[in-house]
Each structure stands twice: as C-alpha cells, then as structure tokens.
Length: 232
Ligand SMILES: [Zn+2]
Image: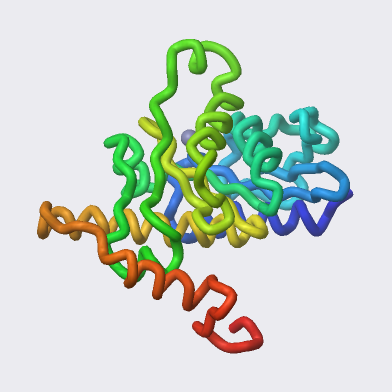
C-alpha cells in the first residue's frame, strides 16, 4: 500500500541523517498523497539505521494510523496542521539541527545577510511566538502547527518554506519529502553563515532589498534564468 510514497519518505529521512542534521532520532520527514488524504511519516523513536520503507507509518488527515505496526512520529499533528494550511506542499521536515536550533532558542529570526540566503528564501527566516502555558498543556504538537500557521498569516509559505519554532527548532516544507529535506539542509547552512557573520561583525545589517529581490527572482520569479532550461 502506497509503496512509492513510503519509499520516498524513507529515503528523505535517511538523507536527513546522511547530511548530519539529526542526532539519534531527533528529526522526522513526511510526505502526502493529497488525492487520497494519506500522509506517510517516520515512526516514533526508531533509529535511522533501523529505518526501512516497511516501517514508515501511514496516517489519515486526522492522524489515525491506516497502515503500519509502529506509532507515528509524535510530531505528526504538527505535520498534519501544515498540510491542511499550506495546500501547495508535498513534504514536511523537522530537525533540531544545531545552528538553526540556536537561532530558534534565541527566538531570533535569521536576517538576510547575503546572497546565499537571498537565493533560497524570500526575506528573513521567521520565528514564531513563544508558546503559552495552555497551548503547552494540551494538544502540544497540534498547537505547534497552529503557531507556525499563525506566523504565516501574512507570509507566503511557498516562497518561504522554513520557520523557526521559538525555543524549539526548525520546520521546513517543500513540493516533496526530498525537497523539504533540501530546505532543511540549506536552512542549516544559512543559519551557520548568519551566526558567523554576526560574530565577525555584530553590526552587519541585511543586504539591500534590491539585491535580495535580484537573487530570489533570478531563481524563482516568472523570469527566472538561473540553471538550465531543462531544470538542471
Ligand atoms: Zn522537535
């Protein structure tokens, strides 16, 4: 059942581990089959070297397990909330990667300090509000998703597929599970560079709006010209 989706999600989770973005099992990737309303996600607490296509768990949009013997990742309600709110996305990724998590713990958005950032993200990487006691006490993971969605009320989730959950860490998303992982890898790199930049020059400000727009739009705008026409 849903073998392709499970394989894709398994591969994406393994990629996260290969890229060094996860310690133990602190991370998870999911993918969605929108036509059938089914989400495939990493099982809870399973080490990456034990992960196979066959232990990927399938849940419906309410989080009910529809296939698999293991419990889904405890972050599943967060993933589902993002799929409900951001209709164009096909994959979600969560890590506690070091530099992105440092910014999240500091409750600081990552300013756009250079063209590496501008190539990929349209504006600063946002950080959510801190969670309130009642949001922590019940439906914590669902409320984490709601916190993210609230932060994106006036942001375009497709142009800015990354967020820092305050006091916690990054969530990223994309057109597929593999794309969501790629955003997590890029975010970690951007977070490390921004940290280093502000260490070297604490007064450094964001690059100009003109330079930000130039770099983002040459890759993502309707007149994008970066790369080859066949998409390579
Ligand atoms: Zn987490």
